[in-house]
Amino acid sequence: MSTALTTPAATTDPEARERSDRRDDGGTGARRRPRPRVPDRPGARAVVGLAAPAVLLVLWWAVTAAGLLSAVQLPSPGAVLSAGVNLLERGDLWLHVGISTQRVLLGFLLGAALGLAVGSALGLSRWADALFAPLIGALRAVPSLAWVPLLILWMQIGEESKVTLIAIGAFFPVFTTVYAALRHVDPHLVEAGRAFGYHGLSLLRTVQLPAVVPAVFSGLRLALAQAWLFLVAAELIASSMGLGFLLTDSQNNGRTDRLILAIILLAVLGKLTDWLLGLLERRALRRWA
Image 1 (cartoon, helix red, strand yellow):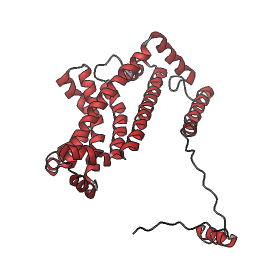
Image 2 (cartoon, one colour):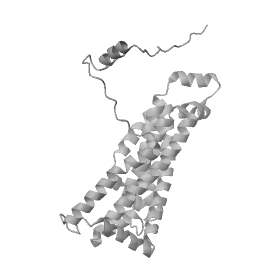
Image 3 (cartoon, helix red, strand yellow):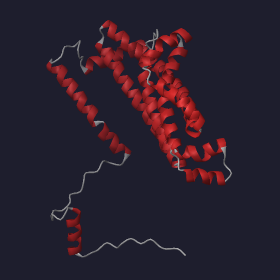
Image 4 (cartoon, rainbow, N blue to C red):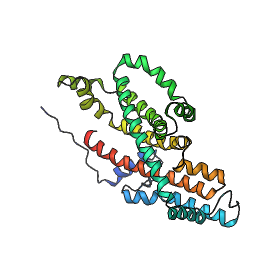
């Protein structure tokens, strides 16, 4: 026997509508004003999102044009653009951007894979949780720069030490979110999966990981942001290329225009990679969540 769900029909009685409006407004009699809505279309949201950077750019131009700060303290937008064009003409700009992006992606992939594996192991096994959770929690509190001397000692000053440091930064957000999400998976869902014959890795792959897809991607996006943060520390390890090197070299040479250019490029690249990961997240949510 099934029951049909019915929704109350909209009334056409003006007095009933007025009573409803008064209930919604606490009985004051004032009509409720519609709240402004954020545009739902991606194009409209992108235009709205560009408003704040545009205002910041205008304020930046106004401050430099009025001479409130010296060119050494804050160069004009035109000076920063000229510095970027100069690096582009010399062929250095794409070299810095390319090597930094490569280091971030390699470190992010390595750290995210390890975070997913270790987080799954500790989230599913009480023994593993009891043995390793305190150690990982302590390591998570170690600052990024504290790893630099040890990595130089172990791996010298090549790419391996830089990628490893970025992987360390990307590991902990993924581990934390996966570990916490798997500890709170609905036990009835797990029992239903076991009833269908899923156990071990098949249960993890088919039931448990799809149940925590939103949490996994939240961890991945945090890990990607952390990877860009650790990039600057990684490129302090005797680096001669990359945006982190461009930052420190510009500081040492008093080139504030290049320093601000490096900061802007880090922000743009970080947002671009986060946007690409967001596209992957939406596809994964449509498929599994």
